[in-house]
Length: 235
Image (cartoon, rainbow, N blue to C red; front, side, top):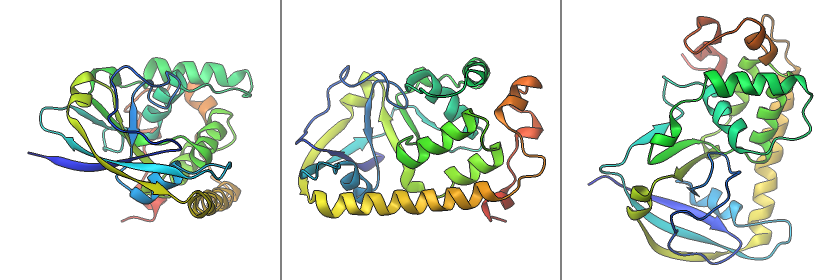
């Protein structure tokens, strides 16, 4: 049996998740969100009120479950954004962004609702800033992909189906020192933002922005949307 250990950070003590609960306007819609990284879960449990939270530990049996991994080569950062714009409340963007978000939703949305589990970026804080900048035509596709590649700590698992909820078992929790982990959370976010500022200051000659994707009616599989490995410093 394929089992993984996952963590969920929350300001309140929490145990077994319940199918059908949760907010509709999370990254991938209603579901239960977790991470493989306990340190990140502890950051999620901390907030600016500095009240101690909890990190809950779970075992998830993967056998028989379908997983949409948005980090797979067959998907791109645009597939992630296409799902995001249909679930998150994204306010304060210029009017031209609405056309771009509709194009992404109409042409780059994978069949994510048919999966039991979604694995992909978590669009909070720094990561949400990166996505918003692209939607506002502030950065290019290459710059966005490079920013989102800053660290795997931004990834999360989202349980979507009843079958996935039936396959998870709560195995314990521990209290989180909010002062310590809120400080760590801010440090990580500040480091990511500093790297973002460095990347966007670099001139991306020929870089593709969202408005170009819409104007030229680019679709999945268009070679112009490919991001070469050297962008990430990989061979």
